[in-house]
Amino acid sequence: MPWAVSEPDVESARERFSRPLEALALGDVAAIVLRGVFEPSSCSSLVDRLIERGHLYDPSQPVPDKFRDAAVPEGFFSRTTAEESTGIEHYRQQTRREHIRIDIGTSLGYRGEDREAFFDHSRQTHELFSRLFDKDCDPVSLIYGRLQELSIDKKVQTARESDGSLYGPAILRAHYGGYAYAPHFDSVRLREKRSGYAVHSFEHQFAGVLALQNTSVGDRTAQGIIHRCPWEPEVDPCLEAGTFHDYAAEKGIERVEVVLEPGDLYFFNTRMIHEVPGLAGVDPRIVLATFIGYSADRDEIFVWA
Ligand SMILES: O=C(O)CCC(=O)C(=O)O
Ligand SMILES: [Fe+2]
Image (cartoon, rainbow, N blue to C red):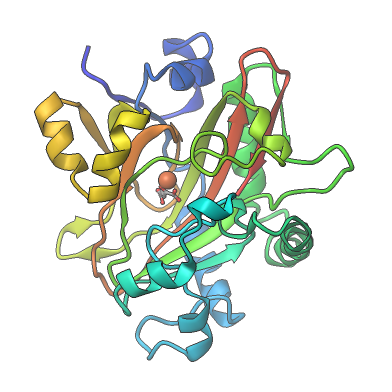
């Protein structure tokens, strides 16, 4: 059987797999795609609201300085140990000026080095999201709800420490001007090695990503690609050298492009090498993204950003 996604809804995932999240954990399915879970009109009104309230900028206007300063460079995540430390400036120098990623929310990968500042920032995100979203527009609860259904009987909740400190519940990300994710994997355990955080204790990490707006050039749109290649140390040299595509071709590794429309939600295992090639369309690609901690033998599932 070729490696493929499960779509279009929770029911079909549950028909195909008795435990869909276990299938993701094992790498049996490339992604679980849930089509049209959020109305396209709700996606566009949310994007308009983000621009009106100054969280994003209108791409037809020059880039305001505050966004240039806040942009997250391609490939950057903060490292846990000083020996491994590669500063953000290194990544800024490698990122083209017009490749701008704006995060609205609190990313553990970006802010996890300073624990206190991370949880302070998360508190502000909870306040901000309670102003941005309401019962008529609540894409965060929507992601949590679908994940709960896919989990069958586990309890989905925002990641928290034993003292009750909450992580950010999700993150809005806008990618302007051809911003790309090169082939990579995400893991608080295997990559960032954040052993001081509760999310470190889960065996598997997934992502749940809701598309809010596509970027396009002609009839092409920027879409994610997932390779049937779980991260192992031997893959690091080609990730670092930017030669993963050659490696994958040589090994005959399968790949799946997950084509999403605004309002589609997908879940995938972030240990699988994945990428989103950049496309310099006028409108930025905008998503609401989460990370998910899952272990077969634990009743709770943690969600963070
Ligand atoms: O935007 C996506 O679909 C996935 C992005 C991604 O790989 C990441 O945020 O680590
Ligand atoms: Fe990723």
